[in-house]
Length: 332
Image (cartoon, rainbow, N blue to C red; front, side):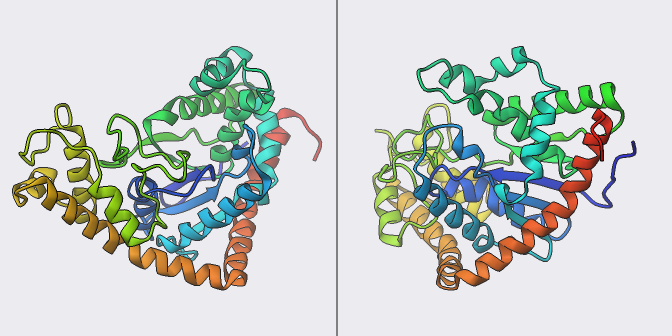
């Protein structure tokens, strides 16, 4: 069986709608995806099926799926170059996931960090154990040669690579074996109130240290003004000894594309650092928020964009699923 090859780099990434997207999601993911256009073909999806591995509210899941999809487009993903869709709109994801469950071993799924942390509790869903196979299906369906992830997902991408290699060995050359694309500098934006923790979209909606992409300017300014710093007055990039200050410098540096030490050199106090950080964050998010509001005001436009994206995704995914089914001996 001959694999499909792509004429240019192809990137695949999904974001689970487990909360409203944060500044970290934008700087570490969405902006990178948009900046890669048109040189790199991209398949980007809202991973709503992954949000069902733990208890969830159905209405909130629908609302967050819509919100996340709209933010993909508002952040600059252009449907001319990037395929944006909702995972559950492409049934091949679930079908290939089962085939990969028939390829995976219980031991390797049991070693996944997320399952070890959450599994074994009363009421744990079976999907939490098997969802790494769904994640692998997400990747392999699109013959992606690059998977951009943060460090907390490295293990899942390595499992995907292992499953692809094993499948190809057992059933014939079927899948592209993807490489892990390390997240760029400043992809990990820390929580403003706890610089040791990542700024997480799953945090409480009222969390003081999390800047949401849809936060109003006054809320952004208030959160940054209350960001943890330290008792030393010097503005200096020193992640080990000054994590709070370095986090703020890293945010400004990521937005302005200046080295953190250059940003620090132009600032005389923590107050000035916080003011500059708030200004650049508000200025960066303002056009995204305007485009988001336009999309929400015209839901038919968003629906049409997602329908077109799902159609393009199915065109790519269904032949890959057919290859895998044929390779495993299933009838056409």
